[in-house]
Each structure stands twice: as C-alpha cells, then as structure tokens.
Image (cartoon, rainbow, N blue to C red; front, side, top):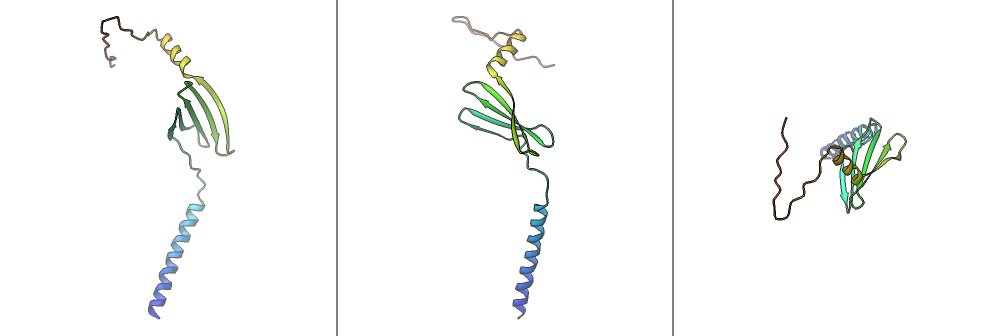
Length: 120
C-alpha cells in the first residue's frame, strides 16, 4: 500500500501544479500584440507596428503596383479601419525632385563615378 499512496501523492501534487499554471495563464488580461512582425508573400509585404497600448498599425505594400496601404487594428473594439493609401512611385519622385537629385546616367562608353556620402 505504500507505493499506492506514493503514486496518489505524486499525481495529486502534479494536478495542483497544473491547476495553478492554468489559473495564472487564464487570468492574464494583457492582449498579445504583434508589434514589429513582418511577412511577405508573392508581391505583398505586411509589416505590423504598435500605435499605442490598444491599437496596432498594419502596413501592406504591394510591390507590383508600388502602393502602400495602412490600416489600424483596435484590439479593444476588435476592428480594422483603413487609414491611408500612398503611391510609392509618386512618393519616390517627389522626394528626389525636392532634393534636387537626379539619378546619374552614364555617358556612352564612359564610366560614372560615385562617391560615398560624407559622414558628419
């Protein structure tokens, strides 16, 4: 009967430890936010960032059409709302024209020489 009582004691102790673990995990109220995660599939890239304590922002980049669409996810309301749509092609053109930089085009038969940017 000694081995029977030992087995009951070990199983009871294991059951209590598992019950405490389930209660600790079940009572957590913090939402699981996926800040900083990214994934790609085909021509799409998805990047997730944290906006504030209850909201996350999701960026979806379509490389084929060169567009970026941003969405906000409110974990309290459990809803997704679109924020903005940008054309990356237009954005790239606007930044290059505002900086006054033109892409270097090589002359026929010649070589272009580029210098690395100066460090402050």
